Length: 153
Length: 158
Picture (cartoon, rainbow over the protein chains, first blue to last red):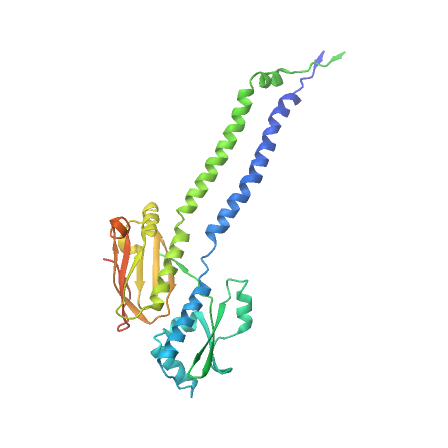
């Protein structure tokens, strides 16, 4: 006589665990992913940084008179009078200064980069600012792609 | 002759004690909840996130400051995170590198987050004062803004 033991009954009861764990995972995985996405995302400071530089330039132009004769002399004057660090500005920022629709100064100013920067954090996020001083209309295009840098120490 | 003997013992055992079955489910659910809780807890104590935040936020004020300004910032959360991560050296939590116009924040051992400010000034006399903030309960960071006179390497909190 051959006895066939039916273990299907035993297996069936425990197979339900897998479906339970599967549904548990369906609930938990999105929560964990959302938490990671929210907390690990880099604190995007580009727009604020650009706004602050625009504010500084606006304040500086309203308090001081600049000669736009030569690009180098204007750049030196701008950095000295407005107390801007040339190394930091040239490394991380783009600036375009126009007066009455005529570009007077430009550093890395490229509007296509600004367009990409709206959706890509590796490109500069730009802001535009326009104001009037002594019957002249100043237009600023300021952007930065600066990110915090992690160093091992 | 082949005789088929169905073994219903296993099924019967489970049916007889639904408590065991429920317990197994409860253990899985509990493990998941505990895991989720631990993940949330670790995120709230996330040194990377907070060092990134505290490296950037002070530059807002520094970039708009004038020489002679004295700045006080509430950095209580930063000190809490640093303590939770075993970063106990007060002098290393905030470091100002005047040569590079850089502020570095270190909330966990071995890793600092740095961000540069464009205002061409020096940061002098930085101090991390414990329990000196609102109602003597919060930790604050104070420093002064000075004209850029020298190319000092860095200002360390005493």
